[in-house]
Amino acid sequence: MPFDPKRATGRFLADDTRYERMSYRRAGASGIQLPQISLGLWQNFGDDRPLASARAILRRAFDLGITHFDLANNYGPPYGAAEENFGRIFREDFRAYRDELIISTKAGYDQWPGPYGEWGSRKYLLASLDQSLARMGLDHVDVFYSHRFDPNTPLQETMGALDAAVRQGKALYVGISSYSPQRTEEAIEILKGLGTPLLLHQPSYSLLNRWIERELLDVLERHGVGTIVFSPLAQGLLTDRYLDGVPEDSRVRRGEAFDEGLLSEENLARVRGLNEIAQRRGQSLAQMAIAWVLRDPRVTSALIGASSVAQLEQNYGALENLEFSAEDLVEIERYAVDGSINIWAPSSDA
Image 1 (cartoon, rainbow, N blue to C red):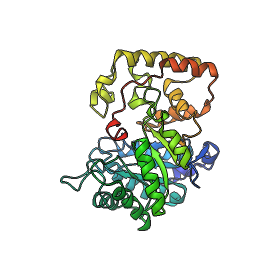
Image 2 (cartoon, rainbow, N blue to C red):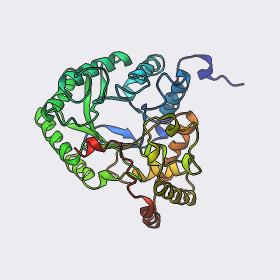
Image 3 (cartoon, rainbow, N blue to C red):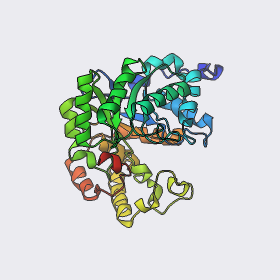
């Protein structure tokens, strides 16, 4: 058997061909390029899953050229666990590759009790960032996001906190998530005045959740801001898992951010129609759904999750066929109808 250095040591040695496997897109008018597929740690990286599984997914992602890992303060379960687990894996596997990684985190949803543990105050955002850095064992993140718009805090204060994070050396860039077009434009102007331009907006976007097409993408393009879309698989609806009913081990049954009401007969009929198109294209439904959000060059990256290395590799396979014929797009339009699945609308409509 030939010598395999990866088996001879517990230390992670990244695949030398990783950058030959991935294409990268520039984030708006910035100097940052992101992989077309980024890895989100919203699900499957908390204490309810084996650490070895999370480690295997992260290692394989990096070997595939996925250089962007996206977290938030309350990812778990419990809150903070995803950052803690990532921090341990980072120390043991990725410290030598720190300068090849884009690591992001967010604050905005509830994280600790009391009036200072959520939303968009300066006190909460900066305290949360300090806690996130401690959990991950980092001195800075590459991107720090306001996770949602706070209707009761002046936007100047929230954006001022993001600017402060950069000036304190705790973040290199800033982002916002699930902000409406109007609030996004306001945030861009405030940050521009502070001297810390907005790098990224992270909205939900999928075949069944197309709200960003109406206005937001135009705003981001006009101001040179990148777009990294989350939930391109509509919380798992745009996969083959729900074509024949609701599996007992699904996120619906586990109650993980997926309301069973989203599985209306209308939505399931759309999913079946889209699945037929994907099969004719030689793709899984999930692969087509990821490819579809990437069809627009204004989308910098598609943020996906993964429960296993096999699932990660399958979804990564979307990059093998990103082209859509005019006929494909016309047929997809028959089924790519808003399915009332945007559970983040309270923020993006504010």
